[in-house]
Length: 140
Ligand SMILES: CC(C)(COP(=O)(O)OP(=O)(O)OC[C@H]1O[C@@H](n2cnc3c(N)ncnc32)[C@H](O)[C@@H]1OP(=O)(O)O)[C@@H](O)C(=O)NCCC(=O)NCCS
Image 1 (cartoon, helix red, strand yellow):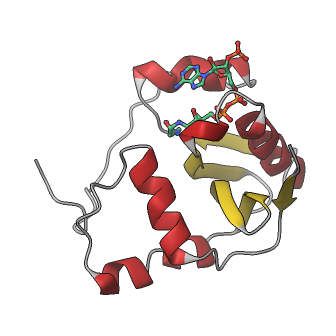
Image 2: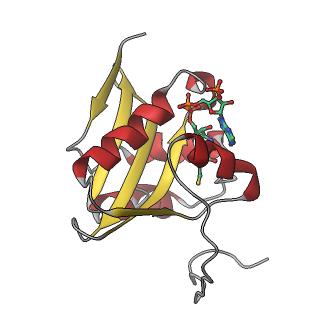
Image 3: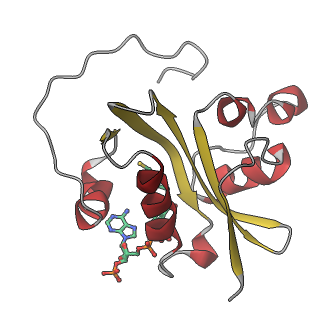
């Protein structure tokens, strides 16, 4: 399996990114063409983006917001289902952490996925998180 990792490209192809998000249920595919066109903006505006490719095919991605010193937070960590369980996710996370190895690393996830991060060196913390929800996501 010839997987290539890219650690510099932030402008991931929006249509492929959209398909990646659909494949793991993060999108129901109902976005307008304008929304799809802008799909990579959060990636372009992130501190670090690491992507995994098989030839020209985007098969995994992760993005990080970081002050490059003390605090780094992971978003949109995803591997295409047919490529899961092959160590691609682990490699994406490892490469992120190598960029800012002394930083605290944070990720917000579900109970179900918590054990994945724990296997990759994260610890559950009992801090209280507060938020103002994103107005761009539909509220249920
Ligand atoms: C989470 C994700 C990125 C992991 O990528 P991956 O390339 O499949 O992961 P790896 O191959 O490095 O690791 C596979 C191992 O993690 C385990 N694993 C995979 N997904 C898991 C999950 N959601 N919870 C717990 N363990 C998980 C596998 O069982 C496997 O275990 P093993 O090494 O003991 O066999 C991928 O499953 C994915 O895209 N999931 C949907 C999106 C998602 O939930 N992202 C995280 C959001 S916070």
